Amino acid sequence: QVQLVESGGGLVQAGGSLRLSCAASGRTFRSYVMGWFRQAPGKEREFVATITWSGSSTHYSDSVKGRFTISRDNAKNTVYLQMNSLKPEDTAVYYCAASLLGGPYSDYRTYDYWGQGTQVTVSS
Image (tube, rainbow, N blue to C red; front, side, top):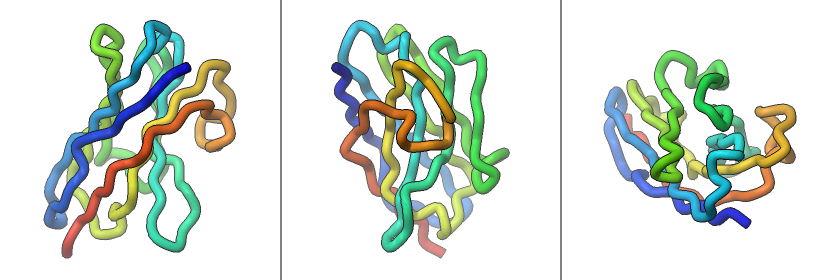
């Protein structure tokens, strides 16, 4: 079992930055592929970024590529999402997710555990 707790969300002006953190419980954190998804009101949950257990490979959605960076610190059982050059369309609840077996990284069904989400609001 893995429990995930996100933090770092908030209100920011367009062009600003935020850093989201996701703290995971459990000693097997380093075994999990980690991902970030987001969901805006009235929209489906959307893939944002993913990182392999070692941190050697990352993938991003086209909408955030070049602006967001995912990273992890296995010693701290934490995964991060650095968000720069934020836009109003980035406004959403951001969720951290963990996958033990892996699979299509942009498919939410790949992930076994989810956090409760943290709200990010970008004002224009």
